[in-house]
Image 1 (cartoon, rainbow, N blue to C red):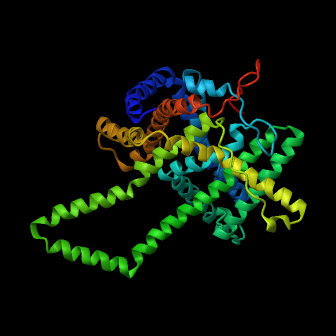
Image 2: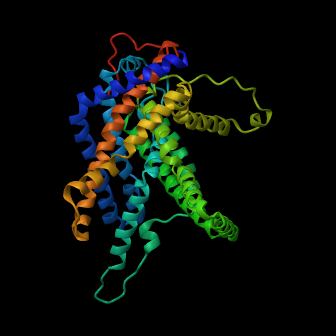
Image 3: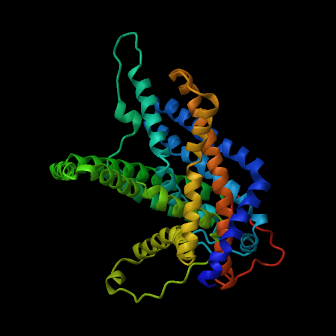
Amino acid sequence: MSDEMRVRDIPAVLVSAGRILRTYWAPFIVIACLGLAFRSATMWLAVLVSDYSGFLGQLILVLAPLGFLGAMIAMLFMTRGSLPNVAELSQREAHQAPTERRPMRLVDVAVSVLVPFLAVYVSYGLLKEDLFRFTNEAAYAEFNQFSLDGDVDYDFAGRLAIYDWQIVLMIVAIAWVLRYALGKIESVTKFLGLAFLGALVEVYYTSQVAQKVTEFRESGVAWVQSRRASRLVLDQYDQVVTTLGPFANPVDTATKWLFGLVGAIDAVVIVPLAWLTVGAVVLGHKLSTPEPPAAQPNPRWERVPAPVRRYGSGLVADVRERWSAFWNGLRMMATAGLLPMLTFSLAFLLVLRIPWLVGQALRAAIGPLETNTWLAIAPMEKAIGLALTMVLAAALLAAAIDWLLGPRLAAGSDPTPAPAGEPVSSTAGS
């Protein structure tokens, strides 16, 4: 398909998104509100449980993003019957999972969904908000312990489950091995519940990594700003602007705008691409990935004992397969063309501003409020904005992914049809 034809398809994609929104707006709103309610409930429960076990409190806390993600997945799956390309792909049989020895399901590539989704979650500031709320409430509860004998054992680090980066790396390694072991056990027992348990393992370790990356980014920015060289550059800039006379204000305004644009790269580039990757994995994970070229055996690898070689290669294949849908989604977007992707990014950028628009509309309708009154309604205001963002993003994602799947299906990237008479996989396992 030529770039010109792709550009002409963009209005049709937007019209398709409007049609999906018109058809499913009511259940979309219900699902979005349920997802946000689940997020708040898990944070409340995490604080409660952390009084008894900081580790269990963290396990519950990492489930909070699943309310947002689960709602998005449910909304995307609901639209499958209205999307011709997605419906065609859902009739096809997925390729075999190397560890479980059964057709690959969405739950098997959970990490391919979690990584781009956490990029969105972090960029929205929701992960930081979760951590701040949990840390604030748990530390408050820990500090306000009461004992009749006056002997209170404060353990803030233990209750908040604060880990160093070395422990986080160990958690990742253990999670990979545990995920592989669960897949092996499932291949013998055929118990699908183990796949969901493995997905929770991936939720835990990816959330821990996301928290640590957020900490590194914030500490890195603070470190750069505290350096003498940074202060020197700022002082020189102030001196240069001062000498410009009447041009000082325009130059300073343009400079702040430029740096603000660079600082907003998350919202302009990363968030739209991450959302599209999430949609591509959820609706297009059955697409086959290209077979890697056969590698020549490494003589050094042959010296490793056979059992270690067998399980080691199985673990590597398992990790690679679980990331395959993520790379496949990126390849799908890379073939879409620059202008269509810029158009989708602009549309998502407008969707991201929904919470701000809701806040401005409420302020215009209600007028000035006392601080305590505003604090009481602020959570509901934010929830309404997030719910509307999820609804609009789901409709736009569904239409965009259906359009992106068209050339891939026409090229016969996954020609294996499902056996005759076999029902389409269910939502939970498709």
